[in-house]
Structures are given as C-alpha cells and as structure tokens.
Image 1 (cartoon, helix red, strand yellow):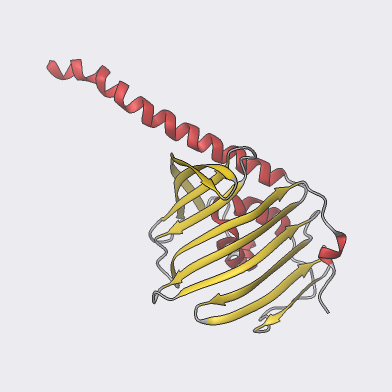
Image 2 (spheres, one colour; image 1 turned 120 degrees about the vertical axis):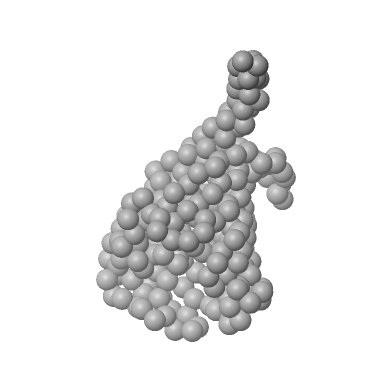
Length: 229
C-alpha cells in the first residue's frame, strides 16, 4: 500500500511541467490567432539552411500580404548550391513571377485562397516551408499538420527585442519523422522574431529564419502588388 502515498507527490511534481506546457501553447495559439486575423502582414527574413549534403545556403527576402489574395514575395541568395533571385506578385486578380532561374509556373490567374493559406501556415512553419507547400495548398487535408509537446524555453534578447522561446513538435499526417521546432516570440507584441526547424529528412536537415520585421495590420503601399514587367 506504500505506493498510494507516492501518488500525491507524483501529481505535485508533474503539475509544473503541465502548467508550463499549457502556458507555452497559450502563447503560441494567441500569436496564431493574431496572424490569422491580420488584414495585412509584412515580414522581412534572413534564412539559413543546411541541405542533405551539409552545404550551407542563405537567402534574404520579404513577404507582404494585402487584402484577400494580394501578396508580394521576393528573395535573393543561394539555395542547394545555386544562386536564386526572384519575385512573385499577385494583385488579387492576376499573378506574375520573374527571376533567375525563370519560374517554372507563371500562371496568369491569381491563386485563390493564398492569403488565408499564408496566414494559417506562417505561424506554425515559417516562410520557407509554407512557400514550398503553396502550390499544393488545396490538396492538403485540414488536419495534415499536427502540433504537440509545447513547452517554454529560455527568455532571450535578440537584437533589441526581448523574447520568449517556445519549443514544439510538428508532425505531418501520413508522413515520416516529426520536425522539432523552436520559435522565439517578441515579449511585447507576441509575434515571431526567430524560428529554428530541425531534423528535416529530405533535401534539407535544418533551417533558421530570423525576422527583422514581422508586422500585422500596418499600412501597405499599393505599389507592392503591381505585377513585375
């Protein structure tokens, strides 16, 4: 019967971990809700990535989301051993991309639902991974992404911003191994400052995105959505 006496002690030791996990998920879900509801979104990022062969790549870029399906995505750097530079713009009706190497798909019609897609995908997986899935967004089941194991990490200062780091696991339904995620949130705005994704098993092994800007509901210059010549 001695084991009965240990139950209250076990409950007390488990409670702080559970409370911490709940607080971590609460912060994440609050951020997620703000981004989903944003009328406009502007981010600037520095991406560093290690490919499956151990080669390092880096890209600087930006994403602007306007009303509906208006967006502007641009980036320049080196990925998988090749120089990349491009811009992809939708004015809400038409879409055009330009760059080096030339885009494989330069459809004239603006992609439907892309604004809502980015607002949902950016909080959980960042710019790079959500961009990879953009063209097949309508083929993804609603429960494809499964987030779990939320826990608080360190409080850190990144540049001039105080942040709270959160760790979580992201699984893809029907896919292989899960990804280990670490997200730093601005302590004041509760918006992303940095994202690290580890344990990729395909063309890349890990990536880091640092956001010099991640702003919602700010005024956006209408010229941002003019199609490239």
